[in-house]
Length: 319
Image (cartoon, rainbow, N blue to C red; front, side):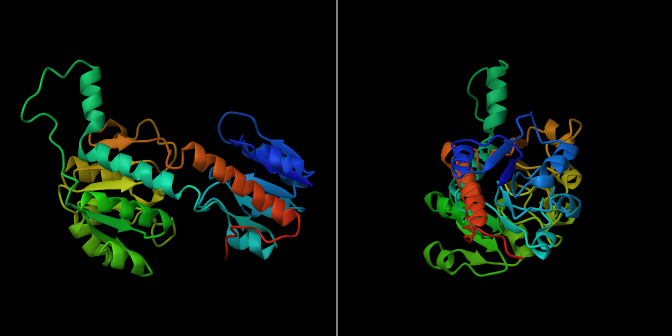
């Protein structure tokens, strides 16, 4: 059977698939596979391993008449029309769990960098602006004993909250479902969205991008936050209205932000957020650790092998 992989994967995933007597085609170019090439290659594909940059919609499915599985190399799957896939009998999978801890680590890296103005300090020192210690040099925000707000208490949101234990933080969260273990072991408190905005010193986003969450962090929301608060987003760029975030920061509605994701992605060169010292930027590296990226590839590969062998996938996306 033929498997199309839309980008080179780390580790041994490609070899594992090939060892199972499957024909593997991998796009080796820089960046995302061109749409016309993808549509051409899927015509006789039995499986596709996709990235977030690859749109799987009715147009693609019309071309891929033999397709049995779309294995997304990511936890999120807003690039896939899951309903359309399932309607046509095409299995969809993602890669949860294996990247949880790495993404939580990166979230904390952004939080700490914003709170203590690490990037500003690096630039100042690198450019020769550091002339010696002074009492008011790059004063930042305290993390110890502050309030951490979690918007979306799924796997990653919970892992971020668990790390707050070491900083004696009060934990608030907003989610559709209660997090009973967190309430018991971390004294986490489930609150509504407005309370989360008003009381969080650090607000960390971990919700999926849905019609109900798209651009939910807008100027109206920012005006309810503390003027000393910091927003962290390692989930999806579309959760934030970026022009509103820029305005909120320059008008002093919030203090700053740490971003690993953008809308669109990568951010356009004229995006004004790129010019702000109060914003720490990462190039979507939440899962960029050796174990996580290799684990994601292995999981996507095993999902493909399972489905093509008539076995249930490990991590199916349900409609």
